Image (tube, rainbow, N blue to C red; front, side, top):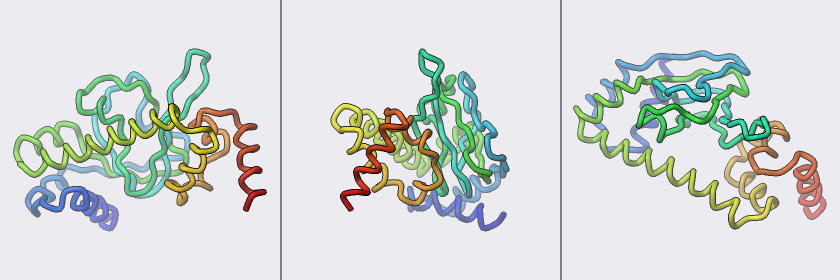
Length: 197
């Protein structure tokens, strides 16, 4: 799994190039490898996220249950991404979301306590944490604004543009839920777009 670990450390450097070898070695000495099967739950609703995971391989969705008992997808995470409800993680509060593997996954996990120590011990980690927070806020804002200002078709087209590598790995039902429409509506949108090509 050395390749997976190196990819993980590279992701830190990509976000914050100023991180030193000493800082990265501290991270490396505190990580663990998780192997989860398809349909396994990484984090349950109302659970405190005790660690933050990086996806080496696989696909994960996060969802919540609405007032009618229906699962509503709010995010998908794939290779080279961190899986987290970041606000919940940083504040160590219970998350409103469940994180489920849509495929067999290999994850690299680092505990919250290690992140806290890194923030206190190494100055560059504060900058790293700020950048992750900005990423989380940007993603949440983009999703919120898409429902305010875009049609269902526009949301679908933007999803295609931004997530082409995973498009064929997500079921129509999961994608329709994420876009806030019924599966039949998504099928009509796809047919319309294909007919215009």
